[in-house]
Amino acid sequence: MEKITMTTPLVEMDGDEMTRILWKMIKDELLLPYIDLKTEYYDLGLEHRNETDDQVTMDSAEATRKYGVAVKCATITPNAARMTEYNLKEMWKSPNGTIRAALDGTVFRAPIVVKGIEPCVRNWEKPITLARHAYGDVYKNTEIKVPGPGRAELVFTAEDGTQIRETIHNFTGAGILQGIHNMDESIASFARACFNFALDTKQDLWFATKDTISKKYDHNFKDIFQEIYDAEYKERFDAAGIEYFYTLIDDAVARVMKAKGGFIWACKNYDGDVMSDMVSSAFGSLAMMTSVLVSPGGVYEYEAAHGTVQRHYYKHLKGEETSTNSVATIFAWTGALRKRGELDDNQALMAFADKLERATVQTIEAGKMTKDLALITSLQDVTVLNSEEFIKAIRETFEQIM
Ligand code: NAP
Ligand code: MG
Image (cartoon, rainbow, N blue to C red):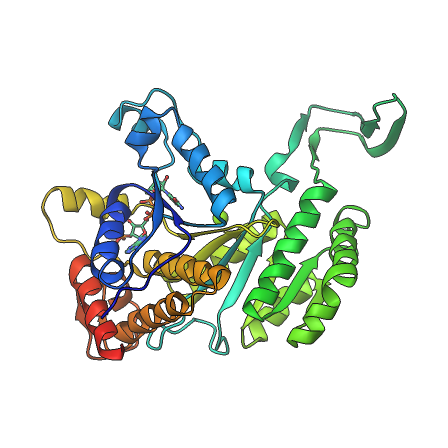
């Protein structure tokens, strides 16, 4: 069989620990035999980030902006222990944070649905995609512990010196205060990323805040979404047969529990933090989630939602067998290859991505899976495979359906 050719390279961001091991296995077994793989390679492994003073992370983000599609392996975010372990010059920032800031993106996460790994919520038949705004609110707050009686005020001073002033509370005793903010520009880019993603995946979009209580702050989110929808997206949504739907956050939560799935749920930063953990754990496992960063400029970065699986890596280093689930990393590759195929009108590449995903799902549905899934599956005859055997089993299924 002739290998599939590519016209534009993917930006390939290699990473750390167990996921770096899986990365190479996936390329060797599932990609290189079938695709004349064109990538611009950036090694975001911690050692190389340290050698380059983290310049490699910035360069990889720049390359993503240039080419439009990247695939990223999980990476270590250094902490004190990693400083010693890797003898680091500095406690380098989270690569995901650096890339997100450079691309101004929104993160979309969706469960990979497989028969035999059932969601706890019985009526969820299709995946629910969480879209989380990744800027501001309580994550960029200013707090005061109020020591005793006094007046708290909210003051804005314009560049010309004029002020807007509101009393927050007249304290008669000790208490607490918090100031939070967001920016119209960031909210607008969040809204556009959500609308574009809904059109891309042909799914309805839900958005919810607490605008009945937060009449200016949350209401501003609601208004910006509605203005952008009416001006730029309504016609395209109508043509695609999909819907934009706004409701209150408590109503959204109630409806989500009763829904069948198959939609995108856009959440403010805090709601997205909390709700994405609820949705992903109800669907089964972090290793069964896709994750993509979408920027309003039409740039895409695909990754796994989980980390570098450090505990398994240390077992691997000791020569012990591991059973690490590679599904999320495989789907990061297929997501990126499909998007590259779409942008380049490369039908063969898109079909390859679809088939590899199908082969992965069918392998699990045939009872061949890693240990994490074997522990939660409802299937009866299950074979637990090690990290490498699982990837090889997917290759066998792939060869059969080709
Ligand atoms: P982790 O890699 O997500 O793994 C935590 C635990 O979850 C594992 O020990 C394992 O449980 C289970 N698990 C996660 N992924 C799995 C998979 N693919 N297959 C099977 N089991 C899986 O989190 P961590 O070990 O706490 O963090 C390790 C490093 O990852 C940290 O340095 C952190 O900075 C980094 N991190 C990176 C990203 C990213 O790049 N996107 C995200 C999060 C964390 P058992 O041990 O019980 O088998
Ligand atoms: Mg969280």
